[in-house]
Structure formats: C-alpha cells, structure tokens
Amino acid sequence: MKNADITFLNLFVKFLRVMPHGFSLAFGKFAGKILRFILWKKTDRCESRCVMSLGVGVTVARDIVRKSFINLGMSAAEFICLPEIISEIDRFVSFPEDSINFLRSALSRGNGAILMTQHMANWEYAAARVVHEGIPLHAIYTPQRDKNAESIIMNIRENVSCMSMIDSNTGLREIFKVLKAGETLVVMQDLDARKDGIISEFLGLPASTHDGIVKLYRKFHCPVIPAQYFRDNKDPSKHHIILNEILSDKNDINGLPFGEDIKESIRMCNMAVEKRVKERPEQWLWLLDRWEYTLGKKI
Image 1 (cartoon, one colour):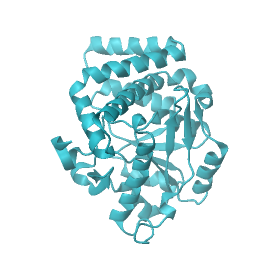
Image 2 (cartoon, rainbow, N blue to C red):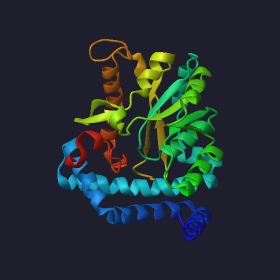
Image 3 (tube, rainbow, N blue to C red):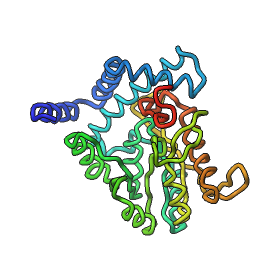
C-alpha cells in the first residue's frame, strides 16, 4: 500500500469514528451495496454457490447474496467504530445471563473451551461482548497480505476488543497454553482447509475442512461449543449471542463419542456450522470460497 493510500485509509477511519453511529451503519450498508457491484464477477460466483448449496432459485440466491454484502459493509463500519462504543457494547450486543453462565459452566470443567464460530453477522462484535463479560478470548487468525490494513485490524482486536490473537501458522504452542490454562479458544470453522483438510460435506457439497478442533479435543478434552450470534432483523444495529450446546458431549451418527472417529466428528462440526447458515443465510459471508479446493470453478 502506497503512502497516499495509507494516509487516505487513516483519514477515512478517523472520519467514520467521529460520525454518529447511525450514520456509520448507513454508510456501511451503502458501501456493501457498492462493493457487490464492484466485485460483480465474485458476486456471480457467490450466487452460484448459494443456488447449489441451499437448493434455492436464482432470484432467492441473488437476494441472499445482496443482503450478505450489506451485512459485510455494516460489520466493517461497526468494527472500525468499535473504539467509540466499546464501553457500551452491551447496548448493541445481547448476551443473556443463561448463555454467560453456560460458558462459565463449561470452563469450570478445567480443560478450557473452544468456541466454534463462523463468518456470520458481526463476529467481531460478538467476541468483544464476550470479553466485556470478563471472559478472556484467544482467537486464531490468518495474517492479512496488506500489513497496513492488518495493523488497524489487530490494533482494534488486541487493544479495544482485548482479544489475544494467535497466528494460525506459528501459534500451536500458544494454543496449547490457552487450553492448559483453562481459557477459551475461538476457532473459525467455515474456512477452506485446502490440501491440509479432510473432505467432509458442508451444505450438501464436499468441502475441505480443518480437523484442528477435533484433534485439540482429543488431546485436552476441552468442551466444543458452537457459537450462535446474529444481527437483529428489526434493528440492524443490535446483535444477539446464544450459547446453549456442547457439541463434544454428543455422540456421532454411529453412536461413538465425539473425537473417536475424526471424520464423523468433523461432520458434526460442519453440521453445527451449516445449521447457523441455513437459519440466516443472508448473514453468512458468501464471499468465502468454501468449496474452492474441492470444486474449484464448478461453483
């Protein structure tokens, strides 16, 4: 990124932060609509993925993808403005007492916990809200190619959201320390694992899936908790978090305990994630090429 681009980016961030929250959200919504047209080739592929994976018609898929871009734009604007509202994050993100207690109860087992998440709604807001309740989070991330953009992102995550970020390429020892310390690890389970993954069905299509959650459970017996969070349809500025299920306490389709059969346990993880996507497909990030390794240009 050139110096002029960096200057513009910093000025834009400052501008958005001084604006009223409603304006920032409206701007993000507008930006999402524009981005959909700028990335028209990727938009076409998003719609194709939506049709094939959800079994819906083109018109329905187009509307889902349109709303997905709008959600992305609003989420980006919210994330940029997080430093301005972090002290009142509970006003924007509902985290019911029973869900808070559920997570604390899982952590009380003493083996740490894995929050299994997906790129839905505003995942950054959800994480910030959990930390706001005094529950430390350690999130696995993939470094960005643009180091200036990454600097802004990491500054907000570490200094505003107060999350500990672990590089997916070099952070294995840190991951072990987190779980040994009985704390919470956040793992995005909807990314294409490419050649390093195990092929498992996701939304009815074969997808390369990371097996790290299952391997960590086998080593530490840490509860695996699917995180459900979503944007309120009536008031887009509001978000909700619900935690009420420990996936690793269940048996797979063959009656075996979670973790015993790696492939079936991975399928359980995929089913938990796809359940969230099916519930609110317009809030999932369809720009993710979830099936790139297995299906390539076919979808």
